[in-house]
Image 1 (cartoon, helix red, strand yellow):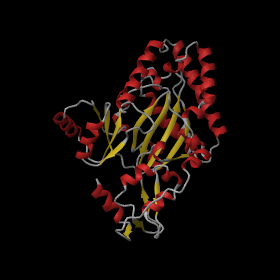
Image 2 (cartoon, helix red, strand yellow):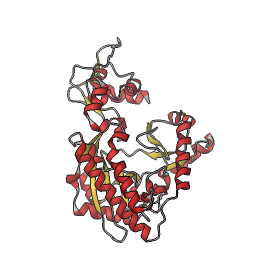
Image 3 (cartoon, rainbow, N blue to C red):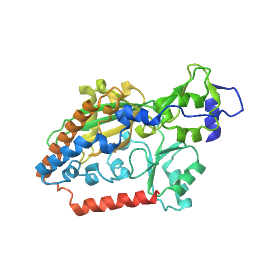
Image 4 (cartoon, rainbow, N blue to C red):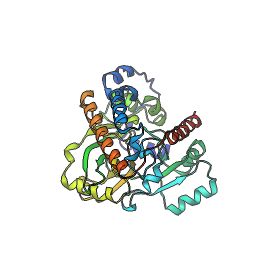
Length: 368
């Protein structure tokens, strides 16, 4: 992996010195996080949502009403759901090649499974049940994949790396008695990157970038061999090619892309998924023309009741606007769940919730 990355970087950089630069973080990370609410703790941002959830729970007579939102997904997609089980609901046309790997899988069988699936490197490895970018990695070769496998505390997925230039999160919902739904949010993901000026080296450019400096502890290891290289003026270098907010990706409000034609495409995709009514598609596509025609779309993940309308994390969005959007979506989640419940879908019981939470906690303990 290091040789490949070095070649890619040196093609657009000039090595000015073999003498290592002493890098010092001068930007205040706490201040960066404090002034931008997108970095605030989940428990703080969601205070109004917790209050509203409590009120809706009283109305529904169940703290777990959300579990009826998507009957085909465990807990409706709020707690501990299996990514592979959800992907299995989606037509092959719309998803990348994906292989499920048990954490105790034997190495010989492991290699054979990759060959059978016809997967080529690079690939993406991610936990089968996880969130916020935990252990999501781009894997460049078999040795790195074997290392990931040996270190993984949980079952995980190996997924075809889709090198399409556009990545979106499309939030879709539909009432159970309707054949047409709504796209309520589109977020466009801008990968963490730096742009050369012909003077500063890679390390200096990272430390001068507020989003990148928050990832410094990881980036200084990943690019240790390239920190002293100087990027040519105007050359862009992508630091993280995984579209996750916790890894530095910038989320941009792309709601202007919502059209009746695009909604019709997602009606078609969504109605083919049995028992799905509410959630966010995380996908990559080749270009906007194909996006609007439903061509060359690869759905990396489908998130259910726990999904967020992620356009609210656009740097230009205020916390007040974000709260308004979140509360609206919880209102919709409530309406869908209650209607499904009236149609015979049971709410999750306390014992079921405890079992799921126990499993989640066990996985967290394994990672320590």
